Length: 388
View 1 (cartoon, one colour):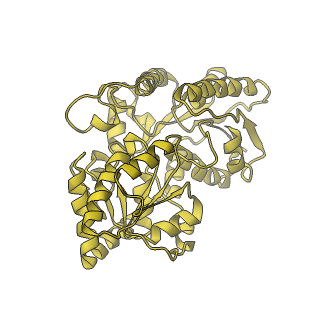
View 2 (cartoon, rainbow, N blue to C red):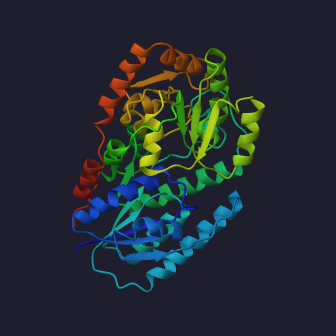
View 3 (cartoon, rainbow, N blue to C red):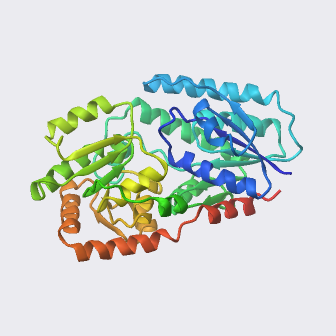
């Protein structure tokens, strides 16, 4: 039986999941069905997600610090521990190494394994290209510069360094859109070693989910980060409430900055129009999405936009900014406003809420488009390129 060694060390809590985490969690059962024996290096939080798939789970850590410096230290510790754990494993002659992300905690031990086992094939998930730190997430597709943050500087230079090392060692890099593929080609990666794999959503959970009794006009799902446009979300909703005073926005998500978010909601005088649910996952998440009329996604930077697809699969039209990746992937079912023009996005929301026939038309387009995305197809494409 062929073996796959998976590194998914970035999980910090039980209540959050990035696009990279979603991919590895959905692809892993499909790899197992193809008779691959899975070995997973992950945190204590991730172990519970893989325990039904394999008995080969190696715990790299469990602690979590609520600061960027603390997270970086934890990543380094997990990377080192994952390297040390490899010393205790008896490896086959050939296998696949799968780094689920480009985070240090995944990439370093994956590269270390590749260095020790030349015959192994290295699969690298690179699902978000770090923006220039002087542009940041918010200014990437608009004019002007941003004051670079330490986090953005770190992310940019670690990713560029990784890309340099991947030129000679990687077998296949999986990216989320064609723009990222072209970027890597310009950086010297062989085009034959890059595969575009779109995301998907769990259609079984979507089908099983039933709307909750509490209806809402809009829903937002995601982190409270500048990349996701959360400050714009509140300005947009304040404009919508001016037109529809009883309009309710449901927010699902969790972040370490929630104290600041509560203050922002109060400052915008939106306490009566926003319901915060915290982290909501699985079937329950889709139940709340189905209970709404539209999905709001004011992101300034995305590589795929998994949340948009989840909303569309639940039959919701999506209001978003006009990001290049959305033009490639979401060709219908989405109303787009110029990047950063929150007033234009508010107008789109008002248009959808004011005209039921128009809203149903866009919703139908969204639902039809969502059926074109499949975890199974992506997993098949990956394994075809990595056949041992």
